[in-house]
Length: 373
Image (cartoon, rainbow, N blue to C red; front, side, top):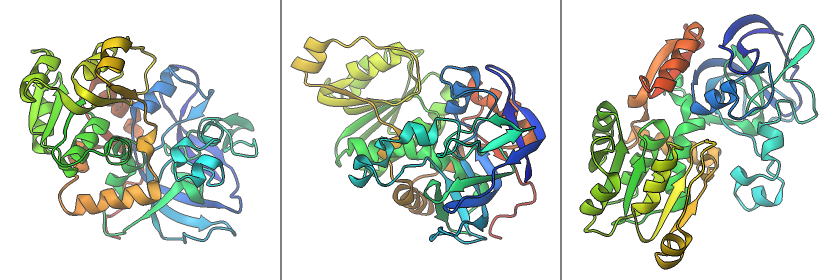
């Protein structure tokens, strides 16, 4: 079938809206989804400009939400009319999936970052030529086909336009704290960068009972929002040394945990320096930058740890419903980071994401969608 999609034709090109994209036929474990909305993520930008690459042309987008139109013959958990969020795909059968760590699926790259379907065929074509996909979903489309394990069913009374980023940015930040770091009540945490991922991590720190939840950024408006969302303290690192400020807030010790979402070398290194003895820093940005770690003083004498975390070590089918329950209880107000854009405004939405003008742009792909229907 023909669909509309935003296509990046070559490295660094702007998104081009095209109406002649051919969507592949459904397979037995597929569901066809009518797209309602999609978040715009910095990972989309990394692939658009070529910091990481799958191939071009490509249809990006991996924070999609929509309504199931059709299901394959082997699909058991979805039916037409279901509301879904889409996330990454994990095979469910490899050693790591069976251990309950689907973000470490041994076939993660093949399934999410190869640009083609598992059998090597194209998800999308234009005039018979392959267009690469992303995360086996490519949500910058009016309709897409994904495998059953890509999708998470969500309640119909929630506004589907707001929910897509739970499949990536919000579950990555919160999962890094709730699943990986697992702070205990009374621990302390500093989050460097208050974009969508950072704010999700910060709210998760508050949910976990951290007595100090410190937000670090260079934009006062974002720090004000961080305070509204539960930060106990904020630091503008453009105006003061964040490491010294964090030490001052923690009786000179430093924080138990730190999360860096910026990918900036100096900031990542500050997240390590700000740790207390035995502390852990999670560096989770998609970045080409490197860090210099003092292995003697930091890693050995002070017993600090520096870790990477993919997708918040999440199991989307478990973690996303948990986040929605926190949202209903007013503990995880992720939608305060969002701003709606028309689908045709995708280049402006992406520019506003890059500049930081908008924390989480949401492309409303179906303007006729009505929440609760």
